[in-house]
Length: 320
Image (cartoon, rainbow, N blue to C red; front, side):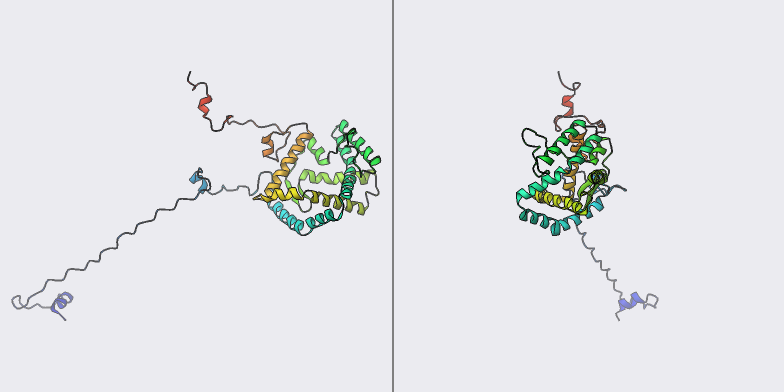
């Protein structure tokens, strides 16, 4: 063991006289340099789908209690499941049957059956026109039904819409009667093999279906008529609307929402026509809005050009 180590490790030992012992200076401590600081990476900027969106707003979580459905569709979760079931049934059963019916039945036969079953809905339209106090339209509907039921061979030929008579068919239901007297549509519904509807129209359907069985009885109470009157017009309608449905869903990101929007806007326009009102675009933007309800005034200023400077239209700020 070297003397320097011995002295460092045992300072309490007796040291020899200075003239006989030569001491060595202790070695300086080894200093290990600290590693250079690593450059910190800047936090990545949040990606925004809209470059004009506020990052604070985009990153904020949705407010607590926010509805998980579109406005006017409180049963959206249920409706979407029913829509998926309907699409599966349509692909496997309904559409093949409809296209098979269109392929097998000649066009004149399909047209005749369509007119026949459509003519049987005229008494339903007649009763609802009476309930709506629209006696002129009720009288025209009665004339149409009489002409087609006699000269039109039970409605197979639609002679009432030809030139000279010119009384076309107009749908009218108990759901329209309820809407005429201010009953709201209620929640939007989608049911398999029924399609889009509202609670108001769904409740009005059985009333329409009971007109002929109650007023006339047989054969309209027979199950064979009940089945054929539902299946044949349904297959015909599905076959005739196949191109429109394919075009509607072809470019749709959300087919369910697209169909809901189109149907509700058309239904709102029909209700507005029943009330002899013109539905403005603002009402159609919210299809669940009652077309007869008064419009709410907006506090926002109206600008003919949304990009124009509001100060430019203010007389107080316009230079003279």
